[in-house]
Image 1 (cartoon, helix red, strand yellow):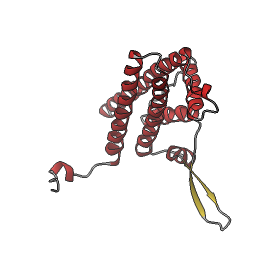
Image 2 (cartoon, helix red, strand yellow; image 1 turned 90 degrees about the horizontal axis):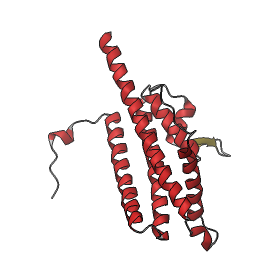
Image 3 (spheres, helix red, strand yellow; image 1 turned 45 degrees about the vertical axis):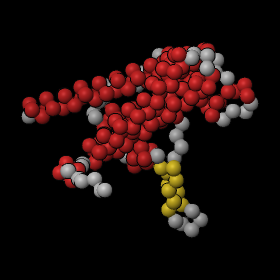
Image 4 (cartoon, rainbow, N blue to C red; image 1 turned 120 degrees about the vertical axis):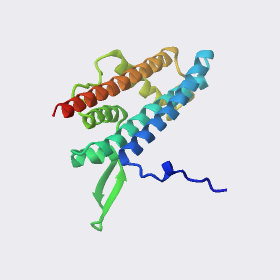
Length: 203
């Protein structure tokens, strides 16, 4: 039986609200996965299989959040350069030997992509005071954990699959750093929006 649509369902949804809703939905779903495996890992800290799954889920979460931030930016920001727009869409264009335009998916280095996603999201909200903190140990923990993720995703031998105690500690610290950075970003955007509203009321 077809589900009856309500009046709310029939109302048009503006692109910004739709992008924001989808980004929040994806972030929550990916975070549930990270929380699930981190809880299991606390119960079984020496379980190497759980360690690998937790690290992979963490980077799925980080990369998913970065993608979501860029989708919101595409809808919200009206003064993007062509280069910024292409990188936010993760595409590149080139000509084939027939002179035809081809579009290809752009593969971005994770650490560059993270910096870019945060920077552009802040730009979209006019949060000029935001700066991603990469001078702390948190950023170093992120980079080290990324190398571990790459190693266990593309192992060359069985030893590549073993996660050392220090490596899993780095991963938890990288997660804390990312949570903190994301919270700082949203807080800067919230304050920027408040300033914009106050300025509008004053005028």
